[in-house]
Image (cartoon, rainbow, N blue to C red):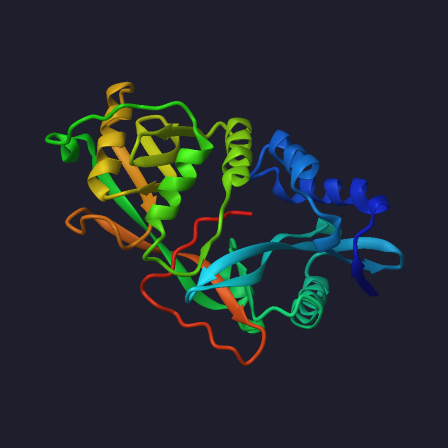
Amino acid sequence: MKCRIATTKDLPTLKELWYECFLDHDSKASIDYYFENSFSLETTFILEVDDEIVTSLQLNQHNLSYNGKIESVSFVVGVATFKKHRKKGYMKVLLGYAIDYARSIYKQDYMILQAYDWNVYRPFGFVEAYYKEKLMLTDTDLTNIATTELLNFDSRKMLSIYERYTKDLNGYKIRDIAYFKQSYEMAMIDDVLIELSNDAYMYYQIDGSVLNISECAYDNFNELLKLIKTVLQQSNIKNINLVTDIFKYDKVYPHERELYTMIKELNDTKFEITDNLYISEVI
């Protein structure tokens, strides 16, 4: 049994592993795009048994704005084990190796992750940190809301809205124009729609009569409602599931708090769990 960093020769096997594990949640086109544009061998960890790759994970690198400083963190993604090798404790060994690597080689204080099953990661010291709220709205909630002008995709404007949106929040990812350009490409592959006004943007999908918003940013909540109202006028949608942060919306609407991201302290440096933590990354 050996843990190591991936190399070029591992790529075919790693892609096969992702196809086996993630096609229930992501399209083949989305996985292919990720491997061609974002996948990093240098931050991919594998565990071999008898020279055969059995499990893998990635430590994607993000810079967060935390307490007024830039904090480099590892974001655990792509946790995958071939079906024939599951329930043998291999991922536990590899994750332990990756945690030690982030602490000793990357010299980081924190590691974050999202999970299908949060309980898997609690024994490793991961704790709840970031939450989002799901707001259940209907078109009647927008009766007295005005519409707004829709703009073409503009990564520079979206970055400006994001930076204004996060200026009084904490623990969020520092983004740039390239981030939004790439997010646009990935959205097109995943059939995610993007709408933008001068004061708000949102990423969303339409599922029957439901508008599911996966990310949004805005100068104030009314500007987001105006953007939603405008989109609804172009569709026959009666229900809205809005997933957003827990700070900048009118709490009169029905809402449901959901765990979004866990964090692990790698050293003695404490990560303060506050009410203004915000993050909206998925990989």
